[in-house]
Amino acid sequence: MEGRKHDAVIVESLTNSQGTQASEWEAERKNSQESNGTSRGTAFRLAEGYELGDASHVVIHETSTGEASAQAQSIEAGEGNTVASYTKIAEFGPIASGPTAGVVLVFTDCDDPAEEDTFNEWYSGHLHHTVESIDFYAATRYVSDDPTRTPSKYLAIYETESSNPSKVQQDGVDWWVKGGFEGPAGMVLLNEVACERVD
Image (cartoon, rainbow, N blue to C red; front, side, top):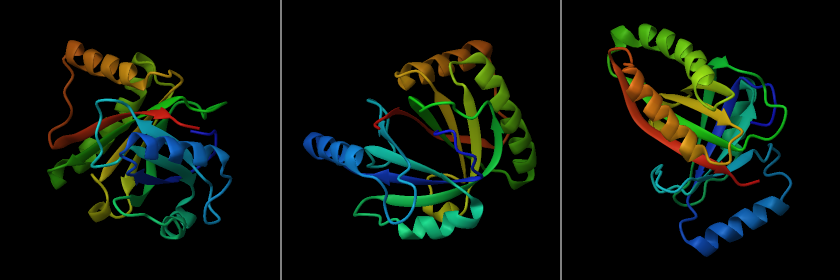
């Protein structure tokens, strides 16, 4: 997201549901520097029409596996907010040379343990296929460090330079349907969330 080398991420989901409250949070964030000794991360607003529980925003911190757990614990999660860490398992595309304009978060599981290796092999190849076919420049997959605290075991983050990640996501859905693609047996798509950069 910020051109940082990383092998883990911390994802905060934040509930700032009222318009004024959300605007104030965004304004405060633009003026803040660091939080609890950790990188302030990159903040995104959920695009209209997308849901992630009660969240209105997500903040993504790029970090290392050795520091992710401690950093996640140091971030105070207010009421209704969550903080979770994920370890990188696959990536495709360049490190950003500048700020990412938008992301699409894709939450998946595999409901058949016997198919999990096949699912992960397929999905890692799917990153390459997706980036080359849609207006994403990079895609990274992660596995949750504690699936009991996350919406799914697996998270993919697709990055775009477009300021309209909703359109990029819809283009991706149209491409998938038109191509007649199918995921592997056992794959469960739980949620896809387009997010617009705040700062």
